[in-house]
Image 1 (cartoon, rainbow, N blue to C red):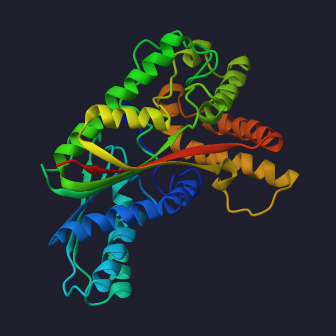
Image 2: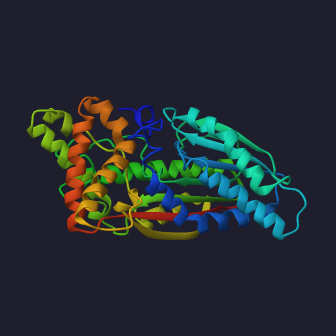
Image 3: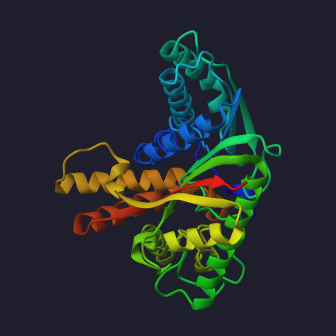
Length: 366
């Protein structure tokens, strides 16, 4: 499987689309808003560029896609007014994701977003020029020394490829407590290789003093097989195993499926940044968000746990379905995610379940 050709969120606006099932990602963006605003403020006030160049990497499609970009424009305008600067900068905005992303939905929403910004900011609104940039962020995406601010949220845990040498990880679709040490090392080494390449590419694209804010699904523990980062995939593996036992999936198909993801710890992130040496770390923070944040409900009951489980299954389907369809075929998806929802509901009724987010803010060295 070539990950760059298969990995993308479900497009459109249907019941299984990412646009309809990305509430938790939106909440995480707001959780880290202050970190992004601080970085944008610092880079603007230190340079006052005539054109502020921004890249949002792994932008996906749907209501979250232009959220950070519009927040950035508003932040700059607020600072400009506070400093009594007459002219607003122009904004050059690069929206990046893999080629399978639903870029058409993004482009259709741009006129509305620009009009909303003009109405809120007024006649002083600086022009915004948008560019879609399909491609892997583990390669160069923008011209040398052009970017002032780079942002990415809930994307960098995805690896460029399934690690080599994970064939011994049978019965698991991701890292688990039963994974052999060689498999754990293979995942970690792939993360190191990919994240180092990401930093190298961004260091070439950012101007000196440019800022970068990344939010990554991660873990607090130093154990890469800990429950806090692997449990969500363990439960999907359980649903797949049930389908094997029912004869709906071949066992060999299950044994050859691997999720191309790695959820790092804060120490692992820090180590890679320090090793690559292009960036200095300003902030590195961990936070948590409940799986149930996939829905908008504010109450807890036996019925709500059931609904929450199915909502989490829909959220995961919007993210993982293209990978699963590529490997297992489309015909089993409805049944698979129904089973997954049942398993999640049972699990969430018995224990507290959370995702761990790592937010890191960096400055490109001189």
